[in-house]
Length: 114
Image 1 (tube, rainbow, N blue to C red):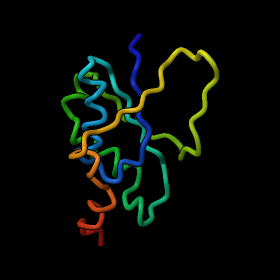
Image 2 (tube, rainbow, N blue to C red):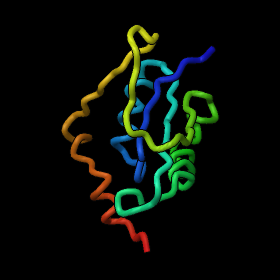
Image 3 (cartoon, rainbow, N blue to C red):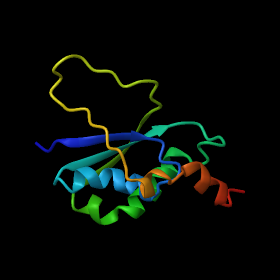
Image 4 (cartoon, one colour):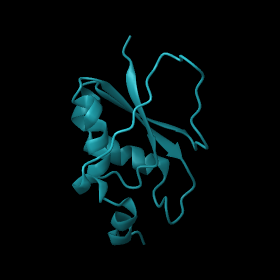
């Protein structure tokens, strides 16, 4: 059975910082599951979850075809909770400054969404 490193996000839009994040696990030969929160469109979420999924699948086509990445849509998440010794790790990745400065808000501001 394949186990996955699970990433939950809005991915509005997918960008180089998101790629850096999943690469941290891919570089350790882990499989990755990218979970897109199904949110209503608004200023912070201009794309539907299906549009986001299509964009990520286009960007990661080879990784998906090789089985290293899965992309799914999940309900909007209010919190992530776990009990003791649940059998998986919870990891935080702190990006280098050049990745940390990437802002989806700034990217959205430059997109022609009309």
